[in-house]
Length: 232
Image (cartoon, rainbow, N blue to C red; front, top):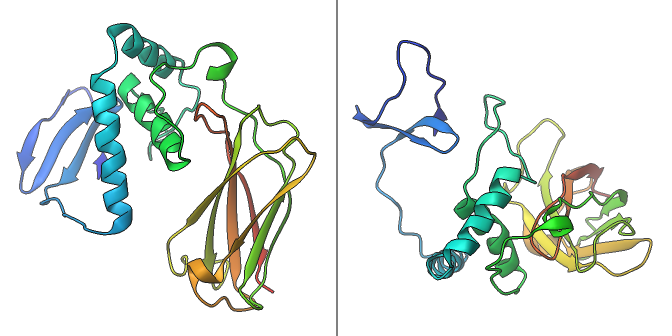
């Protein structure tokens, strides 16, 4: 998909031309190639479809007042995101409802029908990474140490990691892993997972990158703390 920035001569484009669909969303116009949707049967895709189906049903069951609350949260935009042109994307209340509750469902939490207000609608502070290491020995355990002292009550640490053979190459095998652990009231904490079971056999000298987020109990995420370590 490509985004479009229109000028004075062309105010908007809609429709399909030569297999390219021109349309617009809340954040502005964009173009994408027409393609017949794939019907993936993979377990992960099926789980995602099930979540979105449940979220669509839940949204339809909200009151007008509840939907208005999500619109208010989206207008405040506690998690601003930017497109490839560097412009701020504007999300709808429905999109924030999806964002927050998809994260909650992945953690086994219930769907939240009421949008957060007050301090619950604040983006949490990031979790400083205090140590990050990965080893190819045995099962290839990886640990991410962080300071969780400033996390809000009931928050989670969300970790994304990827492996690549050199700093300048693409990820190998090209898929991240995410882990979620509820924070405990201590100054330091560690997320540990068996990297070999996710990425296959690691090799000394490869690099592993990490992005660590604090996710509030409501489902809002901090900005990422990132680090890269060499596999030993």
